[in-house]
Image 1 (cartoon, rainbow, N blue to C red):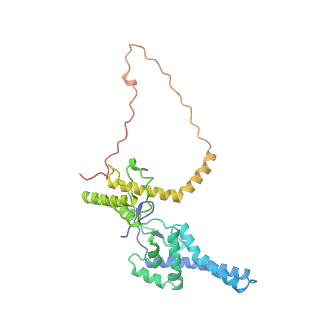
Image 2: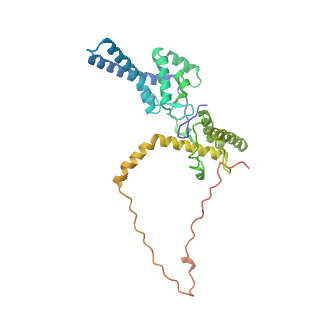
Length: 308
């Protein structure tokens, strides 16, 4: 399975990164990190010349843990898996389901990377990447992550179809914390390919995935909702939650900063036309009759409809 899905519920034609590109990214990161470590070590040596040997040793250990180990973990966490070397090589660290990594993923990768990258000079990481089908090193296996290529042709990108408008926001109270990553991946891969499947096969597959998702969330499938539409609506809800978690505070701060500058919104006064009384006995002009407004919007038949 070469194609992966991002945390925004968008399928990207991403492929697992090969060993040469990963090795080049690691070399770039190590050069930058060790250059910073050497500079900090020289500064500490000059500044702590009057301290005793124990204090100097403690500062040396602290600087080693902070720069070669702590800095890569912090960079991967804040950049969602894009260090300087990976950015230069067009790579990114993602979860198994294609979503952005968090602190725990970066912590596990960094802690195990001390052994397989620094202490073994990358030998363990190279052997693990060659053996793994997706080129994953030991830290990726324990953290549940994968390094993928981001720079792909635009024609490979395929998006998850949006849910019907009447289902958007309906599952805002649904608890999605118990849904495993492999089930998310299966749902997203199905949604991107359901147009290529046979109607009966696609319907049975969507029903099975919807039942598994409902069992994980503890809420049964709503009556009258097609399983494929239910899956698309839940994936859309997870996308909205990830977006609010990642960009909600920034957007709120920007809106708060832009609000007073723009000033309050002033609506123009409404002008009412004078009502002319219709004389009694005079026929009403049909051309001047009010035009009836549009009726309620009826959602058209979509791909989420059950097979005939």
